[in-house]
Image (cartoon, rainbow, N blue to C red):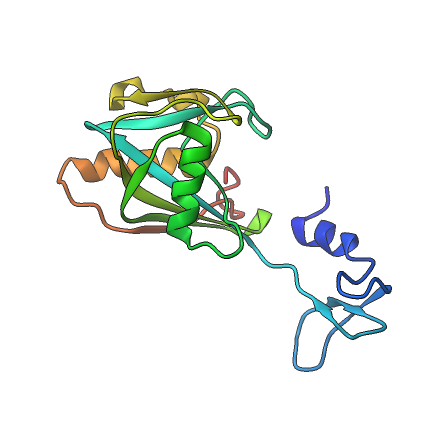
Length: 193
């Protein structure tokens, strides 16, 4: 199985700026092998993707969406997705929540951040409130529901980051203190990320 970096590097056979072929080399002042255009000299960096999402709450219940897309089709997740160019992380979280659950949210705070280096991703999840209690199912969602803690479908959650965020929230809620959580998932010690 190819690593994310190896896979991404193989895709860069041609320069995205001028279309000429690229070669692998270590650019001056760098320490890593990069794809470099043989014609214009553009260095093609492969960087982590940022996923923005929301722990969306309404009357002490958590909004979860059942995925209508791969990966993890049919499993439950927090509304989240790739950050777009020219938006902030907060805007990305609100947009993804709107797209996946049709809910408008008010951002309260940055709540959880997860480094997932083995797949080149960073998850950024905000604690939010659903503005009017309205939610539905967007194109990428089979259904969405509000869950109390005892109703969470723990065995049917799509990603470890979703489970970790929910566990943090229900533990933090006991004291009504919600610190920001920063963790690394999917390391050699924890292959579940």
